Length: 477
Image (cartoon, rainbow, N blue to C red; front, side, top):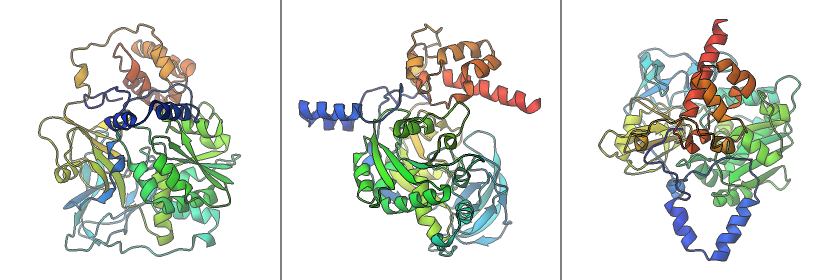
C-alpha cells in the first residue's frame, strides 16, 4: 500500500455521506442489510472509496506530439519490433510482434513516423526498450489497419490465436496476456467464465464507466471468452456500489441464462482473483494453483469489452480508458488515452497543481509511485492519481514501532495468512521459513495488512523484498 495524505481512512466518501443523509433510517438499514447478505469473502477492509469520477463519462484525450511505446507492456516476454527508424505507420498497424506464446504484439496508437527504438523510463524504475513514434497531427487519426473477420467461423484454437493478435492483456492492472488465460493446462477443464467488474481499488472508476457505456461490446467479449475456454456459463461480478452497472448489464443479458450478473458486497480486495472466485462460486483456488484448477477462468470487464470491439474488426489494442483523479488534478475524469502517451502530457492537458506532490499509477493500495513524469501510459495503466504530498507524508515523524501482536493484520488478510509472523521472519531475514511454513508466495500484496497496522510496519514492502530475494536465489541455483 502507498499511504498518502490524499488517501484517508474515512468510512465513506463525501458522495456516499450526502446520499446517506437523503435516506430515511429505514432506507439506510435496508441497504445495509442487503449489502451484508450479498456474496463476499472472509476478512478484508473498508478504505474510503473516493469514487467521485464514477459519474464522469469517458472522454477522449488529445494525442501527444510523441508517443513512447514500451515493448514490455505485459507479463511475459517483451514484443519484438518489426519497424525501423524513419518508417511511416498508420494507426492500428502492428509495430512489434509476439515473441513466443507468453507475449503479445503491439500496434501503432497513432499515424506517424518511427523516430527510433531507444531506452525509455518505466514505472518500475529501470529503463527499457521502447518504440518512439512522432505523431502526424495533420492526420485524421482514423484506424486504417484491420479487416473484419467472422468469429463464428473460427475454431477454438483459431479464436485464441486471434485474441493474441489483438495484443490484449488484462486491463485491470496485472497485464497478463488474455489468450494465455484462454489456453487450459493439460487435465484442466473450465466450466465457468468469471467476469470481474468489482473495481475495488479506491479512486478507480474505469471499469464502472466501461460497464455503463460499452455494455453491448462487453457481452460480445464474454461470448468470445466462453467459446475460447469452452465454458458453459459466465458469472459477472460487480460490487454493490455500482448498482447502475449491474442494471445496465442485466438489461443486455441473453435470454438463455448462460450469463448472469451478481452484486457483490463492497469490500477491499473483492476484485482480487481468488476473492471474486470464492464470492461467486464458493470454490477455493489451492495454494500455488491457477483458477483453472477449480474450473474457472477470470477476465476483467474492460478486457472483454475491448475484445468485443476489436475482434470483429480484426484490429489491435491501441488505447485504453484511464481514471485521472486525485486532490491535485484540476479536471479529473475518465479518459480514453492512446497507449504510449507520456504522463507529463496527460497532467499538462488536464491541469495539475504546482508543488512537489506525487503521482501514483494504478490504485492507492496496489499501485506504484513514479519518479519521472516521462513514464508512458501502458496497457496496464488503469489510473493516474495525483496527490499534493509525497506518499507517506502523513506518517513523517511516526517511526516504525515493534509489533504489538494486536492481530489486526491477521483479521484483515483475505487469504488468512499471518502477516505479523511473516513480518517478524522478514526482519530476521528468515526468507525460506516465510515461503515454506507461512505461504509467502500466496500473498498477492493487496496492502490490507499495512493499512491496518497501528505500528506503521511496512509489511507489504517486507514481503516484496523477501520474494525478490527468494526468486534471485532460485535463479542462481
